[in-house]
Image (cartoon, rainbow, N blue to C red; front, side, top):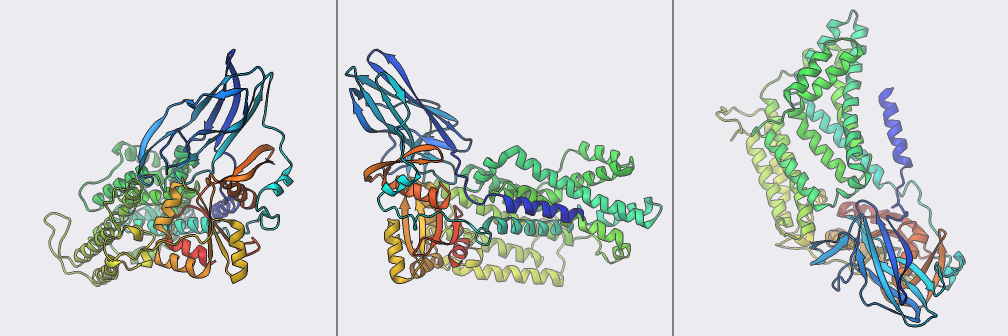
Length: 636
């Protein structure tokens, strides 16, 4: 009953969680006019930047992200000083995607534009244009409008009503009609958390087989049955013990979320530094499973909790659960660490809690079942050397997954140290080594005697060898669809590369829909930007995949709408959007407005599929460089 309640609550939270990117601004600018002297005025643009986001500085090289710069609609009786000044902590770092050093600000920055007055009557009108990104997506060009005249300071001129959109070139009320998202379309996040729960549940079952947990099952259940006056109370206490195990691990998941926060968790999937840390953590855990060293918590922790567990009552049962968590950490810690890494990299705020729930449920179930049916204890296999093999198998698995995180960092920094074929080769070597270990040809324990492998070891060794053989074609460019989510993208392949990214057929929304109407194909809309880092990553990691490229070429009209396209519109149009005056000056502004107005999102990359009338048929799909998932999205 309690477990079903927990699951129902989590499901409700999940179903009610917003699936679209929040359209509230992660950067907010305030504009003000200051009289510096009798012949000089300054306009200050103070920008508050949400944690995890950054705003780019001025005068970045061509081909990079959007620089902060001034745009003028009308200037009379005044001359702008050429240099746009700023007041903020400017940072600089090399970006491998743009192959240049980029300067940016975090937390807060103030841009200052000075004007020299040349006449008693003057008027200045325009906007500060700047770019903002986080580790996963970029906003379209942002504008902070201003309009000031001699003798007064006023906001931007009154805008037209929402119907003023009809003045925008190419606007069609039918094709621009906002869409709604049904639950059957927005399944990506739910499937991700369900998969995480099942993976964590499997991790909990594996943890049961380790030397730190397996021997504790019969001892703990027997203790509860003996200390109680009747079997019913023993069963109740054992079930309560299992629930406390769940509570301890779920509390750990909640603590991870509280400590790191939603923004940090959402950025972990693509943050290069974090992925390097994950790589090192998994390598350390793998070495601990190989017996190089043992990861343990301070002995005082287990001694203190064990002493409190002897107090009896419900409090004693809770401390018994806490004691199990601490004393088994050397075996369960690497598994928990791997699950938390996997959970954090999904980018969902619920992921650590869901992961620990799945793990703890699997760990707690045996205690309740064996308390209800104590006769089953006699059928349990006795502890032995087979548990060491379980730890070594887990060590190889953790080492293999560690390469995944190193690969993400490698692509982010552009090191080129782990191309796809080298990654696959390392997996082949690890699979072969695991098979040889299971056959008893070598051991990680010093001085261990060779023993004849049992039937289970032989079967597992055969599976390892078969897996290695299946990976071999990938060395020459085979897709390997079963593991494509883990390997680096095809464009990093050194030998036998199966390359060829798709190119957009159109860069205009209306033209694409007209083409779709004439040939009966749906339209894949790619909201992108010239300065969007993760848009380039998607194109490099996903659009080069043979399956994805084939699907797009054969079944879709692909249109890429660049929200930072600087091509000016024939005439700027000012509209009112959410109570704010917004001026649409460029083609990029128009596509950004289309994305916000029709699809309720404002960050890129952003993919949707529509029919020739602009009606949604699948999506949205945001940054997730997994070719298999993108293929499933296309097949919707």
